[in-house]
Image 1: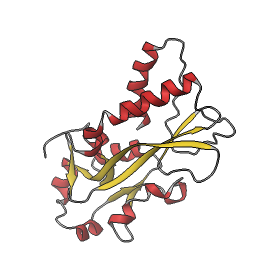
Image 2 (image 1 turned 45 degrees about the horizontal axis):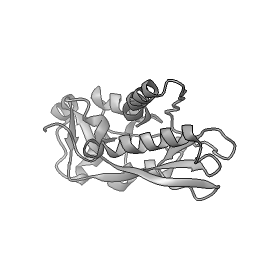
Image 3 (image 1 turned 180 degrees about the horizontal axis):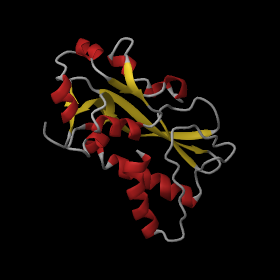
Image 4 (image 1 turned 135 degrees about the horizontal axis):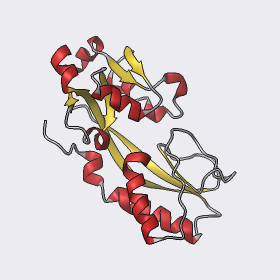
Length: 199
């Protein structure tokens, strides 16, 4: 989300606010707002501790995807149980920083994976190269016409939460960025919830 959705949007924001300097850390890890490791975080879960002000930014949808090449060579699963005989792509279990990313287990019991990565971008390019089937966000899969949905009736929803330390919530620079990010993601609801291509 940070690299694909926020980076271009924040470039527009800095063009309108030349004095604003933004550092976008688009990587899967947790930051401590109390220790000022970041001004704003966007997380997949609502934080349970800390003097934070949090608000739901947006929901987004994920589904199963494979490349045209993979489906031509290996066949298209017709039922969820068919996935057990296919090459699956997933996160590395030991490197999951939140249980919200453990969505393959919601779809397949004891999935067997042929490729694992801590990066969803790496997983997407593995899918694109024909390495197997993965669960990807719609807004990512829609970027590539050769990536096709598999079992489209399986749809997973997740939410993004924006978090700011309560001592910083009224700072002008924080408010400008937080409001802009919230507005940008809310303006992309169709992209976040529906596939933007045929097939």
